[in-house]
Image (tube, rainbow, N blue to C red; front, side, top):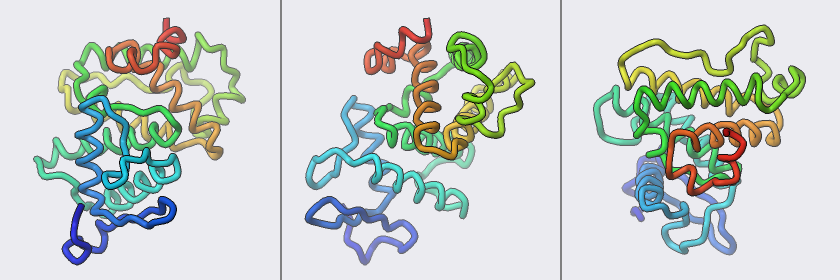
Amino acid sequence: MDDVISIPVHFRFSFLEQPHRWLFDIRSLVQERQRLTESGKAFKNPYTSSPLSPETLESIQKHIHWLHSRRYILTADTVEHVSYEQKAVELCFLIDSHGYLTNIRWFLTMSLPSIHRFTETINDLWTESLGLTDEERLAIYPDWQTNSTYLIIPYQTMNLIKALDHLLTSLITFLKAGTLRESRGLAAVYIVTALTTVSSGARRAFPFLQEMAV
C-alpha cells in the first residue's frame, strides 16, 4: 500500500502471513479497516484478501496503543474528534482479536439514549442476569470493586462526545483488564451482547448474543 521509504519508522507495521512478511503504514491499515467495516466486510490483508489472524489483530492493537501513548495521531481531524474515534478503533481491534468482528460505526453512531441503554444492559449482565459470582467477575476484571453495583459507572452529561468518550475509555479498560486471554474474551462477549440492544448491525451479526440481553 505504501513505499517503505515514505513511511515514518514509528508508523511501520509488519506481520507474517506464510510464506511472506508484509509491511504497511499502520495508518493505512486503520483506514482500510474503517472502509471495510463500513461496508460490512471482514478486515483482510489488502494484498492477499486473506482474513487477518487474531494474533495479527492483537499486534495491530498493541501498536496503536503504543502510538496513542506517545501522542501520535493516526487520522486527520480535530483533537476532540480524533480522541474518541481512535478509542473506538482501539476497542474494535481488541474485540476483533477475540473473533467477534465489529464495526466502529456501532459505537460512533450511538446517541445519548443508546449510550444509557447500553450502559444499563452491560451493568445488568454483569451484576444480575448472568448470575456471575464475585470470583468470576474478578477473574475478568481484577480491579472491580465487589461492593459496586456498576461495571460501567453512568456518566451524567448532555454532551454526546463526552459521554461516548467516557464509555469507550471504560470499555477499553474493562476489556484489557483480565490476566488470561479467556477472561478478556468473556469481556468482549459482554460488550458485544450489550451492543445488540442498541445497534441493528450488531443484532444482524450476532443474533445468538442478542438472546442473552433480552
